[in-house]
Length: 255
Image 1 (cartoon, helix red, strand yellow):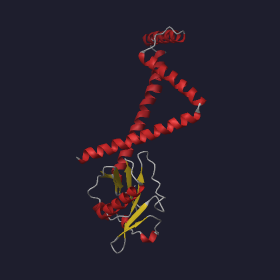
Image 2 (tube, rainbow, N blue to C red; image 1 turned 120 degrees about the horizontal axis):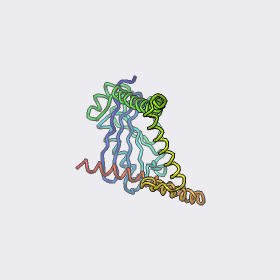
Image 3 (cartoon, rainbow, N blue to C red; image 1 turned 60 degrees about the vertical axis):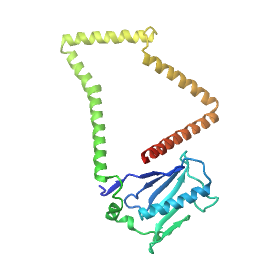
Image 4 (tube, rainbow, N blue to C red; image 1 turned 90 degrees about the vertical axis):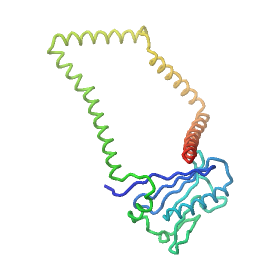
């Protein structure tokens, strides 16, 4: 089992974008800094913001950072027109000066401070976290809940029916009850098959939903290209709505 902490990301709003800073996981040299751009801006402004944020976060937490910028559709910004790479790497060099690189960095240039867990725990003492022991306990609880659910389903679907069958052959009263129950199920099935059994509101809604699904599926088959465009538009809208909601919550919490 791993020891140490898993830190929650720090999020802050800047108006036309917000930042998400994730401390490095155990064994990784880099923290991750994401700028999520919520308004249309020139790429040069995005580059400037990335460099400014990099210096600020390195001053706060002097740990090597890998930074990227994303739009509100969760696509990474293409900065190749003005920079050699879309990603910015920053770190504190041996002379205690900040280095920013829009290019690959040799492994030996990056300090190994992130391999010292005690150092990281002291550095990130202001961030929320869970220990890996706590996370493992939570996983064990979820597994136990799943196993318990499967056991209850087994009892309900296997043990109880088998018990009823056993009593059915050994108890006249229970046998009569089961006979009447079987007759009622048979009558209900016949009425349903003959179309004479009134449908509940839920059944009507489900039937209408199935009819619409078949209708839409038929038209999607007729025009797959339009369906693909619509699907991509929906995915973009879902991503945009999620990012807008998250940005809004950050602005409210800042007040």
